[in-house]
Image (cartoon, rainbow, N blue to C red):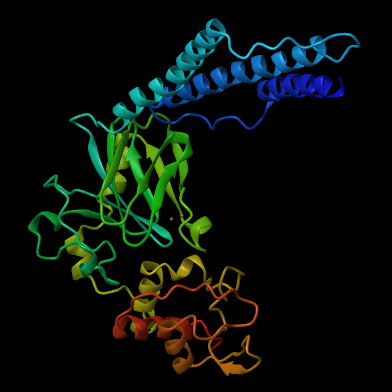
Length: 369
Ligand code: CUA
């Protein structure tokens, strides 16, 4: 009887919890109310089954409890009851799955007039690109990726020259215009997710995946990665700003085209070492910044502030002076030695000799003057 009572409390508690929970959906900022509707359908159907099945168990525990002189009747099968149960379960499962299929079919079929946004994921950051005035995204390939061309656009493709390259992790979009999002990855499986849009999609290396949505509510929304993609995964964040068309166009005008980014030399503040400035771009492009700060704050890896010239203790008990040779060797082969106090999780990142030199100069520039 105690079990019957406990089950009853669990059923009532679960229903009440769902009605008063603060952990409900974030405010919707896109056209995908149907996503919320399918979720509601799922919660209601599974909720009904949960309540009915548990109340039946409570009833049976009470009604058929042990009493002296009573014997259980043996009834190995009951055709009529089985047909009822199969019928009800079938209807329940169809009602759970069918609405999602309808919504998903809509989700991956963008309207003809949708504007195009490209999202590129890499460990551990987001990049964005719009087609330019020509209206076409130029070709891209992993072999074109370098510090100056982090999106890997084909420099010889005329269609790519006017493409608008977003430098940084924040992209803007106009309200009430359908957007077709095309996604690709430079390295591993990522997933572009903005909870307020109810939209997300896996990004599989080697293929382009897509979905579409129409922004409906102005604001700045955080985009995150919804697939565990390595130690920097929680830092793989960006922003999507939804604003009026005029504000969006004004912002878009300030963004460089691909041709402009290729022509420009890395901007170096006067007096600063141009190699170190280039190294800063490399640190951004290669995702180093997900784990290494330059302001002294703690992260997955050691901060670069004051790292150069320091003596670090290694896990094997020895010590090492952090100089150019040490940095070069460590970056080239990050798992050969391990620094005390840090997990040995740094990935080996492909760098040209020029990129490595620039990166080391950048780290050196963070040393106290
Ligand atoms: Cu990318 Cu998690």
